[in-house]
Image (cartoon, rainbow, N blue to C red; front, side):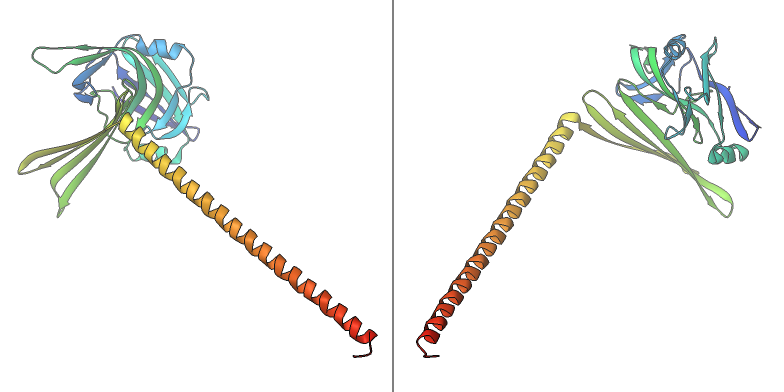
Length: 281
C-alpha cells in the first residue's frame, strides 16, 4: 500500500491509499498522551460527501491543487481513503523521477473521538468522525505504517515534522540522527516538543525537550505588548503635540517680531515726513 507514479501529457499522475481505516497507526504523541490511532470506517466518506474543498499539498506546506479544481480526487472504499492526483509542479516531478517521494499524508479536525484503555499496551484513539482538510504528497517518511500520516489536527491542530541525517566517514555510515518536531494546539494552549534520536555503533540515545504555553499566558504577553505599543504611541503623540506647540509658539514669536519691525518702520516713516515738513531734513 503506497504511492503509484506515472507521467502522462507532461503531468505527474499519482494514486494510492492515503490511510487504511480500522488499522492502528504507529505510536504517536497527542495532547492526551502517547497512543495509537484508528480512523473509523466511513469517516472519510462522510467528510468527502459534504462537498467542501480539500486541498492537495506538498509536505503539508505548499498548495498544489484541490478537489475544487480537479487536481485531487478522493474516495473511501473497503480498504480506506484512496486518492488520485495530478500535478505539473516541476519540483514534485523531479522528486518523483529521483524516487524521493515517500507516500501520502492527510490533515483533519476530529469531530468525534474516544480513547480505549488497554491493559498491556498504550491506549488506542478511535476517530469516529472528522473533517478532512488536506491530503499531502510527502518527501519525508510517513508516521503511519503502510499508509501515510505525518500531520493531524486533533482537538484543534497538530503538526509533526521529521528530518533524518545520515553521518558518513570515508563512505561508511557511522550513524543516523532523526529529529522530530511536534507542534500541538488545543483549547488551553500550545506545546512544542522536539525529539532527537542518535543511532550509532555504540547504541541509541534519545533526548526529548518540551515547552508549553497557555493561551492565557500568551494573551497576557500579547496584551502587555499591545499596552506597551499604546503607551509608545501616546508618548509619540505627546511629543508630536509638544513639537507642534513649540513650532506654533515660534511662528507666533516671529509674527510678533515682524509686527514690531513693521510698527517701528511706520514710526520712522512718520518722523521722516515730519522732518521733511519742517525743513530739517
